Amino acid sequence: MSTGSIDYTSEEEIAAYLTNLSLEYRFGCYEEKSPKSCQLLGEFFESITRETEKAFQVFEANCIKNKFGPSCNKAGHQKILGISTNPDPDLGYRYLQDGCDAGYPKACYLAGEFHKLKLDQPIKTEQSLPKAAQYFDKACDMGLDKACQSYGSLFLSGKGGIEKDLSKAAEIFDKGCKLDNLGCCHNLAIMYKKGDGVEQCSEKAEQLMNKVQDIREKMEKEQQRIKFQEGVETAGNRPLQI
Figure 1 (cartoon, rainbow, N blue to C red):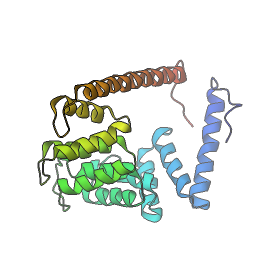
Figure 2: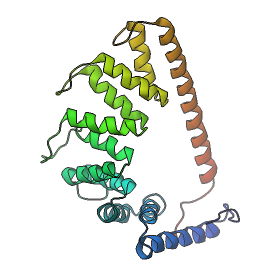
Figure 3: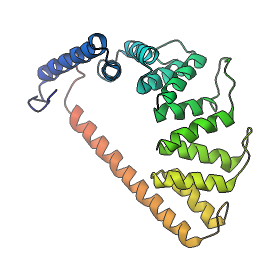
Figure 4: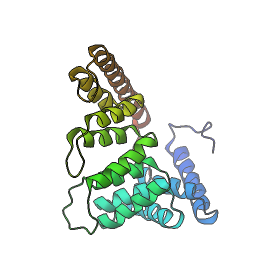
C-alpha cells in the first residue's frame, strides 16, 4: 500500500490509513491464510493499537497453525515471561523450538537463552548449557551476531557441562566479529593481546580494537538517528485513536 499521498500532519488521514492497513492485514490473515499477513496483524496490534493480548493470540495461533518462525519467536518469548498472557515457560520454550526449526535465528537464540534463564516458577524442561550451546551455534551459523557472542562466551568461561576451550572461543568470536558484533571483536582483541587461545599478536589486537571503536561509533550514530526520527514523528502529535 502506497503511503506517498498521506499528509502525516493530519491525524484524520493517518487514522484512516491505519484503519485500511488493519483491514488489509485481517483479510490476508483470516481469508487468504497468509502466515506473513498474520505476523503483520500481530505486530499491528502490538505496536499501533497497543492491544497486546490480541497480538499474542495472533502470534500464538500463527505459530501453532503455520509454524511461522517470527510468530513462534514472539509467542515463545511472551509465554515464557508472561507478557500479555499467563506465563508458561515450558510451552513458550516449545514455541521457540518450533521457530528455530522453521529457520528463524532469533528463536534459536532465545531458545538458547532459555537454558540460562532463572525462573521463579518450577518447570518441567531441563535447563542445560550444552543444549544452549547447540541453539547458539545454530543461530550463529544463520548470521545472528549476538548468538556468536553468547556461544563463544560459554567456552570462554567453561562451566555447567561446557569444557573451557579458549581456541574454540576465539574461533567463534572471530566469526561474530566478522558479523560486526562489538562484544566478539572486543573479546577477540583481548585474547590476541594476552595470547589466550590464539598466538599473541599486539598488531592484531590493535586492529581489532580499532574495529571495536568503529562499530561503537556506528552504533552511536544509529541511536542518534533513531532518536531524531522518533522526535520528528511524534513532535506535536497526540497518541492516535483509530
